[in-house]
Amino acid sequence: MQAIIFAVVAGLCWGVGEVCAKAVLHTHKVGPFFAVALRTTLALPIIWGAYLVARRFAPEGAGKGLSFQGDEALTMKQWVLLLGGSGIVAGALAMIAFYISISLGEVSKMKPIAFTIAPATAVLLGALFLGEALTMRKVLGVAIVLIGVMVIASGSIATKAGT
Picture 1 (cartoon, rainbow, N blue to C red):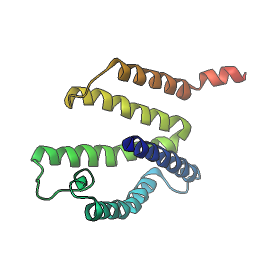
Picture 2: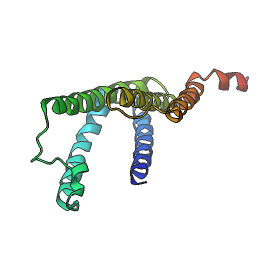
Picture 3: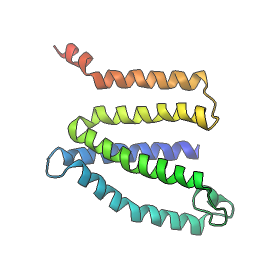
């Protein structure tokens, strides 16, 4: 249940944050690269602060999921996955691409597209590389969400209904 609560909070924060970003990007006074650079610059000290608090105050044994355990060195492969996949691909490239998308298109269309492709990709890659179960329930859920986003993003249904 805790995981779901944090996922909901993350979704709410991202939804609010991207609408705020789009509102400013729409003014054309700043571009997507400045916006994402500023976002990251402001986020870093907060994230490091949360890390230090979690490391300091987490109950014995509970900190493994919250902080880096220096006595358990990561392998080279784990460093590549963490820095390359999480840091560069998700942390930098995805943010840059997403901010460019919302500077060019409607956040109400770009956000659902990006945040539907992400879980669909995670379901597939989780099954292929992490040994997670690819159940019919997951496949059906992803398909339903993808169809819903296609309806949101296409705009043609709303246009025809309004005419």
